[in-house]
Image (cartoon, rainbow, N blue to C red; front, top):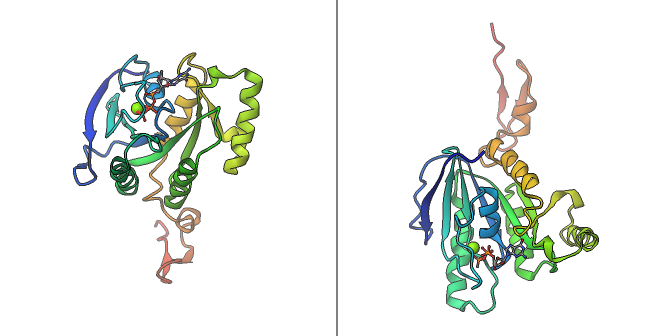
Length: 229
Ligand code: GTP
Ligand code: MG
């Protein structure tokens, strides 16, 4: 249930970034025109909260939306639009990557792909980057209303193979018909509710029983959990 929405504001440069709060944050990434702003509007059930446009490359900053005072959605500028000048591209990539590396509130990324197209070189670079920083990632396949259901299923499989993912790791979605919205919202909430992977305790710590001794993988020092009296 969306009770309140607040536009926190744009972040135009990494240097200009000030953490607004430590509310958990999920970012939306994808090529220009893939439907990021449209998907965001559907998620929060508003017509024009994030600006949708027929001019690719319209979202030029990272826009933050606070929802119900409990989490933040970050609409990233689209990458990979050919007509965008090289200078603009040179500005955006460090902005997106800098933000994704730096945000301590980030819990996950929703990566959008147009269901009709094979992932582009830039999409694959983005996936590599997300894998490198190990951020939990959901894949949303947009504009499924443009294909017949049977074709959608085929494309889901083809894209999964291209990304070395399972079919069920992808969420087919349409901002036109709202299909897939609830699946997406559920996946989003599971990202938001998990602890940050950046500060996650090591598996050793998680699996340790009181009184057990383990060796810290990094420092090599032995650790022991105190047994309660
Ligand atoms: P940038 O801000 O430029 O990166 O684009 P964006 O990814 O935010 O895309 P946006 O949501 O602005 O949508 C781009 C165009 O695609 C608009 O004309 C939308 O109406 C259209 N569009 C978005 N999602 C869908 C969808 O699911 N189905 C259909 N048919 N059109 C869509
Ligand atoms: Mg946009």
